[in-house]
Length: 385
Image (cartoon, rainbow, N blue to C red; front, side, top):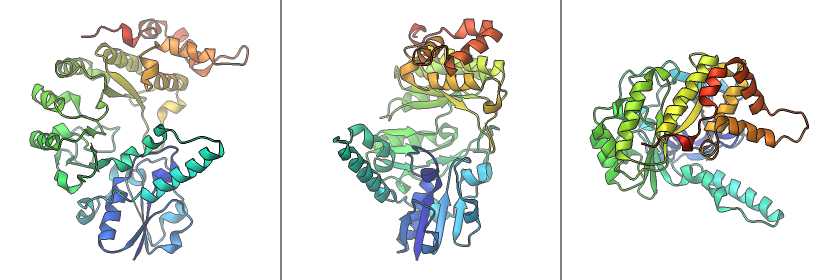
């Protein structure tokens, strides 16, 4: 049996650098059955395989329509089905991932880049290899599945509760240095404590890539979470400005247990509306996060078919805010106004106004009070608790 596996996001998205866990599980399943398994890196060789499994996470990732209905092609993932993606068969869902699936592709990318660098008389910098760390260093999986929130903007609406999904040994490879969890709402599981204790006991740096629900944090949860070897940013979400007071209480709780500079919150914009109020609410949440020395990360809402913010009169503002806030090197050193003005300094054409500065000026003209309140706030000026 000859099996082809295609990670559509790898082919269809620029600089996409995270392994598709479903692809790795399918590969592990078929290799155990002594099948020949290849990771496909084009759409040209489909006739060479008995069965082809295609997965994608993002709805806007390209996949040739003419290939969808071929008899030997099987598709899956939120990229095809959004919030209605069918489950994998249990024997695949609970199979150890094949963490070597992407090895040949990685070696090819490195080889090609090395050749190009040598033509220029240079060597690849160490930073080049960082793009492969998720593929090479991490055991990846779910300890729990499901979420009780049922947020309308989220694809994770299949379940109305959080439940234990798999023991960690199901996907943990002791030869790998780190662990990455993809749980939807880990602290929503009644068994969170023994699961977290076991995770910490492995003495590996770990992270929850999808984020954690700060609204249900407690002193007990904070104390245990911040006692472990965490990898990178602690990630949470500040989706709704209506949660402002609750989030502020939880931020105070977080700061009782850690002074980490790597606390990040996803800030959803362009969902409830795409008007001046939505822009104001974004800045209001950013301001609160700054107060507690936490980093915002602007998430511009996209539904199954489009991104409403792209047709908003404030499209330029959404772009400018994201470019400013999502790069800590900018956010920590410049106010929003200073960032936009710095962009203007890069303009070479006399009389031309940069897109960020024009967006700021147009918005400020219409909404001077919002601009006065937020455009000059700086991360390093906020009161550090």
